[in-house]
Image (tube, rainbow, N blue to C red; front, side):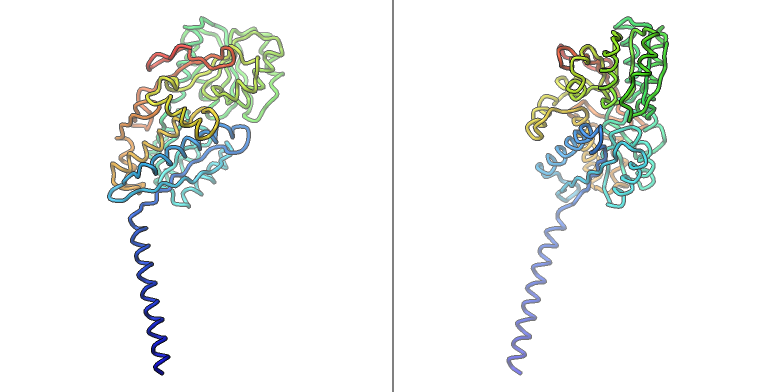
Length: 391
């Protein structure tokens, strides 16, 4: 009996010791605030190189925040990235959005494309999840009345206007052909380009359409060739821009070629080769070298990922930091509590000083036009911001 009682006392003491250890771990864990940041973009398919670039920029910001030991309220925050592949498909984007909601993310950086950001935004709005897109430029994205939708990049109304004015006023061209890929981004940008070009005396002598999956444009380009346009504007992304440029030159067309930000990538130059020489494209914002912390960011990015920035990584970095700044202002990572603070944020980011208007658009956004010269993108002119760096 004495032995039995002794064994019971030993077991009871061990249990108490175990409880003490669990309580200590729980208390320690409670001092840390886990914040889940969702990200969405194409991680597979033709635009995967741009989607991965977005993910890299987002990851850099999260890693930097964790290294700094960011405090939200009285707790040290630990940020986690939950990245999803929306495949540039609107239906997949809504599935991804719902998955992120179900995973209880505190906010979302994305989506990359306007055609995915717009349908996904309805789900985030319904669930009160803040969404900051680094790259969705379609006007509609922030015109739906959703107080959860923001972007840190100039929209297509500003970009299309800048390109249309550049083509007419700076290049002095008057007869334009226009093709768009029928996505929310491509069509929206092309429409704004047409509006600005016509307002400045240009004629649209051909308006054609394709898809964001097409790769053979010989027929439509042959039709356009007979009309002898001074410039062909394409509203779309680089997976279609590459074969379009190659086929344009293969047909012997000397027409100037122009795209929006969807074409301003190293990949376009790499894959289009000599045919891309002289091509114009734009990117909302000032050149990387003119960004407040652009050169330092590019250096750190290349050291980390062993490749150059493709397109929107700096904007992803800023989008994350806007979200974190709002959380700090609110003293909480709960979406309902920090959402009202996003519109009040004033951030000196990598790309620019970021403040928002009532719709969630960035104020005072610039647009820079670039041209390929000797296999490199060179800034030609910046509108609405600081002068572009000289090539």
